Picture 1 (cartoon, rainbow, N blue to C red):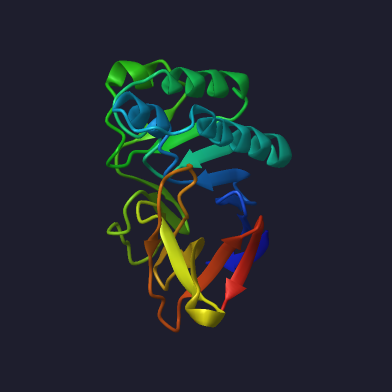
Picture 2 (picture 1 turned 120 degrees about the horizontal axis):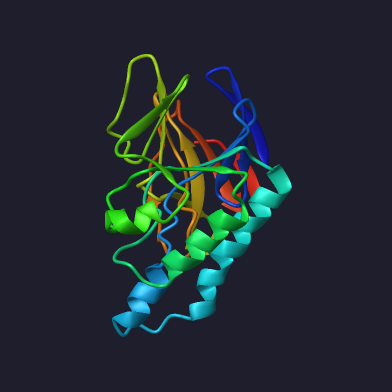
Length: 214
């Protein structure tokens, strides 16, 4: 993990692709895409069903270790239409009902309202202001006096080694006005970014968070 100061706030970047915000006792995550594997399997794409278990295990471990008061999801909680993985999510929120579960909706959050109503989620359609941050899904929401934290992009960088070897790794990407969290969920893919000199990039590699020079 890597402790940083951003806009005067102490944040801990975690190798589980999450941020712990100390003052708010909050864990921030983005792009879980729960139910994605079940969705693909239903459409004839062979993916191992046990891979979905990693999402649940990682979430549980984060809550047990950090004991947050809030768990804030920056969009794309669920991948698509309803499947039984939603019931697993409801079971998880019931198990940790001492946590305030918050969802800022993303473009994939298209479940019917009756499903959301059965959960413990507090839902914000577009953005949540928690100064000095604006918490949202897509990076196009920018306020002059707030720093935007978001998801959506699934940020990664390409590392080059000897013999023309390359490796793509997920990262936390912190620009001058917008910070982008890595995608939390499994099988979510990466979008390779090209940082500028003033950007800060923290790779996630082998259960470590590593700052790199750009």
